[in-house]
Length: 107
Image (cartoon, rainbow, N blue to C red; front, side, top):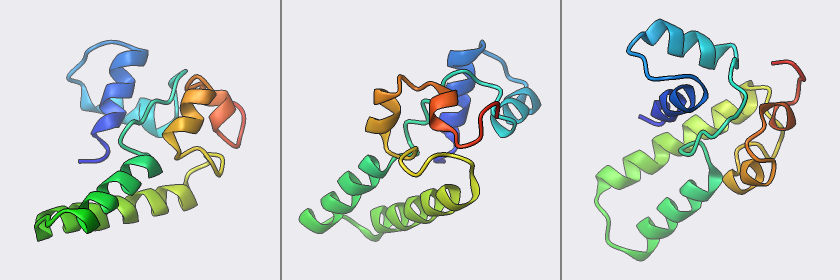
């Protein structure tokens, strides 16, 4: 579910399409000018875990939080994004410019 934001990024950068292969290729090869990836953010994790500890949320929300945490950590390790790239506030400060967010220019 977290990767649904890749589809949103594709639509913002290109246009609406139902061709999953086009979306997959563009996102995998970073063929976008701007990286929004709203769901890929530590801020969402902080809010979600905070809500879990403050409110009596069900195990469903705990499972969502664990899965989201694992996903973002693995993405942080395996993707060529700067150390701060998974902070939404950082991406906002960089105006979502892919070249400023990625470690390797041209990706």
